[in-house]
Length: 529
Image (tube, rainbow, N blue to C red; front, side):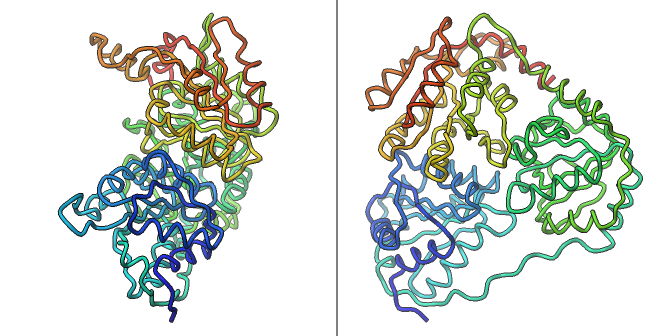
């Protein structure tokens, strides 16, 4: 039994689980004693400019660290504003603890906060002093239990400063691996296959999973495709990497060539919403028995994916006919379909400049929008989390908060936020968060005064252009007003040189580049068909 305040019990829980910092916008109430107790244990509080950005920063921190990200907010409007980050964490399996003050003690700002979070979290509840130590441990542990995801807990001011009781308890053990019979059935399908294909997804980013993914690919002698979230699980330049996988038309040649598809840690939310048109049987390897959405596998291997891979490799059943030339052909087909050309700067040429000017390894965060096609295709990742993207939720306003989380977590790796102008305007104030903490974040804003991906959809539907454009914004001037180094890159200016200057600067920087958006329509058509 312990006799400490509930706020301190939370801080001690953060310490046990390796939490280095928490994010949020406090509004009094329980947030203040939680921040104070955390500071006492050396856990930093990062004041974001909005709760939505704070939740994204915390969720990305959880992904990068494999430990719970933590975000806090006041009752009422603060709690409501955390929901975008919560939805991101739920759909994309990010470990995240959301601490919401309240519920409010009067009708002012009062609503059922737990009910609000029910569809977008794994669990909702309330932390109280009675058994508080036990509940804190369970909440933090649950965020990292397969499938990882967000947990939301209310905590009020009086409870936060009251003595907490309870105990930590015994950690829950790992889930069991698939049965021997299921492994044998999968091995039989592999033995029969002559052209297997391995798809790696978001669950394959952690621990030893990337190593086991490579071992599977080598044992099966097969090409590998990665979802956006799994970019870097196998290095992009590895000879077995055939390219990115979303389920779009650009990848059909690779999928159609396969006679067996193994998904390794893939969540169906990672695919675009389109019918699955391929005939090859699917062996699904996942950590948790979640509902199927798009794929109808011939066989499901549910359990720790590393143990599953090890059991499969023990059967030594691969008989692949793949050649390195065939895999190279698949890679070239995908690369060629997303390429564009223009006399002005495009998302393609901008991303090339980001890569060419880089002094070494970088981590790019990519916002939702038409530019993501080029950015995710051209960014080189040799490790998991080398590129960060909101895929399942595909939220705008993601790239800059994600880059700040990256810079705080790995300050030695330059963080580059690649965003459209629409996405940046949703979180523009977070530039001051980066400046306040000296984050080496380079924000590259592709400026075309439009929501270009929605503009393309409007064109495809032959609708009049409406609701997708806005007045030009001088982002470089805004950044400079925030004491952030900034460069403007026009159609005839050298983007690569601007990037070299931004990398050399070391601190927060912004490059405002005017781009040609006319190429997006053709590129989207080539990708998605």
